[in-house]
Each structure stands twice: as structure tokens, then as C-alpha cells.
Length: 125
Image (tube, rainbow, N blue to C red; front, side, top):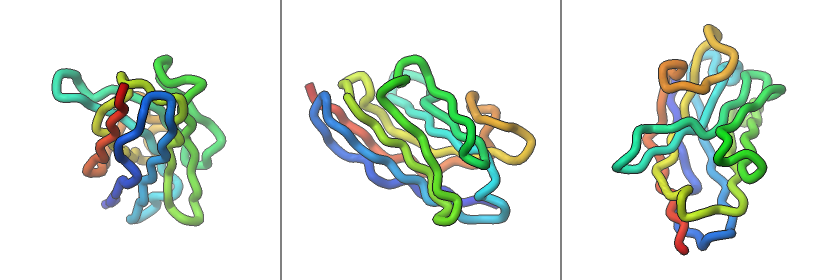
């Protein structure tokens, strides 16, 4: 059992930056791949970025490449999403997800076994 708690969401102007955090607890959580997804009321939950258990490998959705960076601090059992050059289209509830050692990276919802409660990010024009 893994528990994930997101924080850091808020309101920011277009072009601004925001840093999200996901604190994880539970057995073997520091070795699990993790990811960020986002969702709006009129869209399905979509992939944003993922990171391997060791932190050596990352992958991103095309829409955020060059603007967002995912990282992890396994000593603190925390994953981060640094969001720069934010656009109104980035407005969504952002969810942290964790997998198991069955997958290397999480790029689909079906890869995730655990989810956080979500944190709202709103980007104004």
C-alpha cells in the first residue's frame, strides 16, 4: 500500500512558473516509477510526465516538453514537477501516480497502481 499526497497547486499568470510536490509513503515507494497526470472536467485524464524508480530516466508528453521537468528525491520520498512558461491550456487538476516494479515508466493510466488526491493548477490569460 502506497499513499501519495500532492501539494503546490495554485493560481498563476500565463508565462509564470509553479512547482508541484508529491510526497509518498509506503512499502518500497522510493523504488517505484512515478508520474504526473492532469485532468479537466471535459477531458480524460492525460499523461504529463514520468520518472523511473532510480530517477535516471524521464519522459514527457509533447505538449509540455521543454517547459516541464519531473524529478525525484528518494531520500525525501518526494517527486516534483517544475512547470515553467505556463499556458492557460495547462489549467487542470494535477495528479501524482505511482506504479510497481512491474513497469519501468508510467505513461498510461493503466500503468499506475496508486493515485494522489490531486492539486488544482489554474493559469490565467
